[in-house]
Structures are given as structure tokens and as C-alpha cells.
Image (cartoon, rainbow, N blue to C red; front, side, top):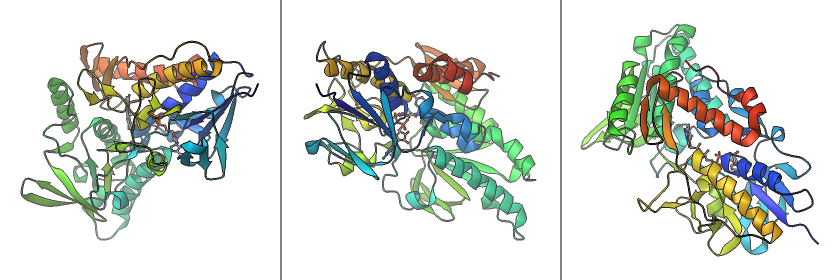
Length: 404
Ligand code: FAD
């Protein structure tokens, strides 16, 4: 009998979890598993704000995919997916094509700029290792250039972060922590540095417990972050941003603008003609594309509705990994042709938002946490993600053990 071809696109939390679970569940003679990813490494997306701020080297947030896959069962292809052709059961890559019997789309997120002028061209987004490295180097370049120029341009020392959501706040925490050291390194008077966070919603961290939000904002303000809440970015230019609060329009000159206020699924979803909202596919209970029972979607390209609130679950690594675990189980059922498919039921254990390596806020198992307790919890969560994919040896290699 012919072995079915299982093709998994993307080796982030969702795709890699699917792969490592599936390789445990089935034998080498049961299916051909192929994993495709742009790079030969996996990165911890949830640590990218640290690499971007320069508080953690980018090599610490990534590891070779070959470290965790079983090469007897999984073929790895380093390539970029350009399009899926469901009617021909084909995936087009930059350098070739693949055919599948079962497909898993796990291509992750891209930045969503909501059509705001200039953001694509002039703002950075914390999207992957390459972007993180570029952000860190860009800020350092601005600081180095400030002193090297005869005519001092203070805007070189201004960093604007668009968005006080999860990613924006986590990045601000790292950046504020890094600043004293960066100023010393580049002989900059810390009083000249401005870190400004612009958020259009009426509060930072919308949806988070208000008491914890107040704690987070005051901790960051204490470290020098200025918040402009209820203020929308109207345009990004080569010189900075234009913001508006009601009828008041203001230009803020800044050498660095980071956009951290929106994500969408992969452009491949749209290229392939799937029905989607911001490139996220509303999947059936088994994580499949409606009308295409041979295609599963996990992670940020999938959209699952929370029945309690009737709103989509926010895209998180927590959900991506749980989807990956279930997807592997369901694939094993299909490959073997026995057993029943299981529907996806997320088990949300909590949320912890870091405010730098020594501080955080969170709600875990329904309990509010802040300060060192919360930051300890954050590192436990980070290490657990490594453990779930690569076991204790990966935790030993890449884990976070500096707790305070
Ligand atoms: P990803 O992990 O993004 O992986 C996608 C993979 O696909 C990558 O390896 C990428 O290289 C590859 N890829 C993309 N396009 C192509 C292509 N065309 N061809 C080939 N390969 C491709 N979530 C939490 O639960 N907790 C947190 O604390 C948290 N913090 C975050 C902090 C930051 C700074 C950011 C940016 C996000 C954070 N998130 C957090 C959200 C979380 O990171 C995402 O929800 C999660 O990464 C989604 O997993 P994924 O598998 O869908 O995609």
C-alpha cells in the first residue's frame, strides 16, 4: 500500500508541535512526513521582543530544527511556501513543489498595518529573528550616530512603540531595562532618550485586569516610558509619526518606530484563495478548512471562536501548541483509518505579560500575579514550551534559569 504524504508547512509553535507529536505517534512505515520551513531553525516567537531590545542574543531564541525531529520519520525541506493549490493537492515552494494527502498549514503571523500610511515602509515589526536583529542594530546605530554627528539630532534618541497590547508592553519592558546600559555604551545622557508608547484604545493592555494594567503602566513609567493612550497613529514618515487625539494632531519626530499593534495570518492563505478574515481561516471543530477535509490549520493562521464570548481566541503560542498536539492525534487517526477525530477544546491556563526579566503581570489558574512571582511564572512557561517540543535536553540547552 502507498504511504500517505503528510506535509506540514511552518516550524513555529504549531507546526513543530504537530511534527514532534506525530513522529511519536506513528511508525516510519505508516506515512511520509515532510516539514517545510523558511529557515533551518525554529525560533521562540514569544521571546523575540527580548532579542529586539537586545536583552537576549538572537542565538538564544533559536535552535536547529534537526535537534528535535526524527530524521527516520520526517523529511525536512528548507524553502519558502508561496501558494497552496487545494484542487490539485499541491504546495508550491520557491524552489519546487510538493503533493500531499494531508496538509497542515502552520505559517504563523505577519504584521497588520490596517492601511496606515507609511507603516510598512518606515516602521519595524517584531516578526521574526531577522527583524529582531535589525531592530536591535537600528537602535544602536541611531545612538552611535547621535554622537558622531556635528549637528545633534535628538530625535535619533526617540523610540516610538505603536500599540500597548501584549507585544508592545513586553517590548517596552525590555527596552526600558536595556536603556541604562545602552546609554553607558554609547555615551548618551539618559535624560535625552525618549521612549513613547502610542495606543489608540482607551487603556493599555485592553482586556487585562485593570489593577494589573495600572501596575504595569506605573512600573514602565517609573523606568521612563511615556504613554499616549487614546491616541491613534495616523501616519508614519521617514522622520517619525503623526498622531491624533480627537482633533489634536501632533508630529513626533523619532529615529525608530516599532509597530506592535496588529497581526494577521500568512499571505499564503490569501494567495491560495481560501476564505479568511485577515488571512486567518475559521476552521471546523477538528481544525480543518471547511470544504477541504484534507487540510488542517494550526496557530495564528487559524481562527477558533470562543463560545463563551462569541469572539475569536486571540492568536497565542499557548493555543498554537495545543492545536498542534490535537492535529497530530487527528492525523494519526486518519493515517491509520481507525479511531475517531477529536474536536479542539482549548485549555487556557492563564496569561503572563512580561515587564522585563525581573517583573511581570499575569493571571494564572484564575489567580492574579505581579512582580517577581509573575516573572518567575513567565520563565516557567517559557521553559515548558521548550520541554513540550524538545524534552529536558532542549530545556537544558535553551532554558531560562536566571530567575531574578
Ligand atoms: P510562528 O511561531 O510564528 O511560526 C511560523 C513559522 O512559519 C516560522 O518558523 C516561520 O519562519 C515559518 N514561515 C512563515 N512563512 C513561511 C513561508 N511562506 N514559507 C515557509 N515557512 C514560513 N503568545 C503566548 O501565548 N504567550 C506570550 O507570552 C506571547 N508573547 C509574544 C511576544 C511577542 C513579541 C510576539 C510577536 C508574539 C507573542 N505571542 C505570545 C504570540 C505567539 O508568538 C504566536 O501566537 C505564535 O508564535 C503562533 O505560532 P504559529 O506556529 O502560528 O507561528
